[in-house]
Image (spheres, rainbow, N blue to C red):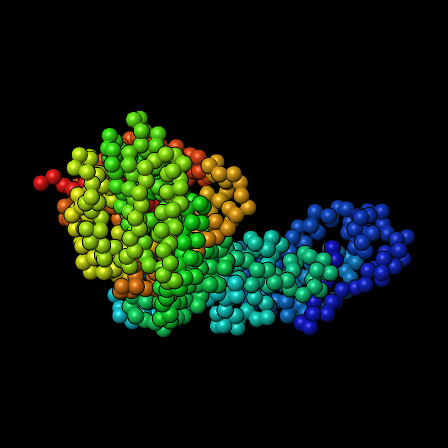
Length: 620
């Protein structure tokens, strides 16, 4: 067996293969018959009877050379290599058996047993350890956060791609950072991490050539191997987001500044929904830390862009469709047998909810009723009458299906500006006419009133004054109105992570309700921007500027109950038809319609995301 060693400068001490072959040819005639022919062709004299003994000695020599530095993985290995480079005579051992014996006697070190791995160093932490990658715990990378202390001591998280190594540990191991055995690089890296304390401090590892590798590989420079554990990086990302939010809550903006700078790098190591939602939360935290709050939509371009995002969100996922469908079903059942009906929509936008209700009323046995719609909307920056344009489109549609239709638009900066007389039935009606039955509809609007003290109570009082038969309310099923910033941030992180997951799941197929279109990818991107603006408002804004104050169904039940309303049970028909609607939608397998205390919720897998409820004035 032939071996070559490298000196400290990296030059090869091996013998040229051409001279080896010349020696073999010159000595071939004098070879004894019992010498092994295969090894003789390579220049080694080994008797056939000595093969077993030589093989055993070679194995001992291999282990002595490979494991000699196990007790001190860094320094002892380097010292052994240096000894071979300076004190060993380099020659071609033609008598392999005697050469192996001389090497073993020189080393005088039988193969030592593998020592037990030292216990991994751990930081003090009350949370459970999450492991990933090479066996190191994710939270071992971080300093502990003492929540009981007013001083926030969390240090910045090193980058997952080029993390700085511990200089005290590296000084004892230079110039070789990691030594691999004859196994694969990945397995050697894992075992070396365990021996080194269980924490992999960097992602760049120099892989040394194995002891049995050929001279060409031994002369090659070390190859940098980049190892990125996306699962561990994901845990680090979530921890960085929560730690930054805690620093913001404690007003430790120096720590928050250090942490928020780590989030983009950590988010870049992720893929899909996790990367996107982390980027939006990272941006929102940066705006909060650096006090760069988003400006409200004040220009015509801002208003048009908001309407465009809303339209794309309607097309890309079933949330708005579910909201409109379930609310329409409750209104349709409340209007049964009525000849004159009136719907007040607290935010009509483009009027996308009402063509379906008009069509259902047109198909009603006995003919459609007279339908009046009052649409409320904000003032336009250019002072155009956008509400009137929506009314014209709906009037044209109603004419085609032969429904008696009337429309009135109300411009209001906030719903609190509405007064009961604005919503009352017209006074000039015939005394013999049937009274007008009113329904009030609110989709994702009531939570905005919580930013203004007393605004919700005033609006609910106005609604009660017009005596509606039914009030339909659709809201996000989440609590983003907590007084503590960290609680609000944590809840919103879970909520919007699920929302982004549902967008990813729904984009895998195309809705059966509409043909495949080239713009389906655009719908998803614009929907992500739509949700990203909500994230920015929840995280970066405070006071009256924070309008996305979502609350759970239980909280709305308490608020509406105190205002004098009682719930109306949504029938099983609405549940069945909503389930059918989702079955036709792409990615519908992940969505779930659930009934909760007479209300309907739309969930992605097990997490409810929006809730539809119906109410009426409580009996005296």
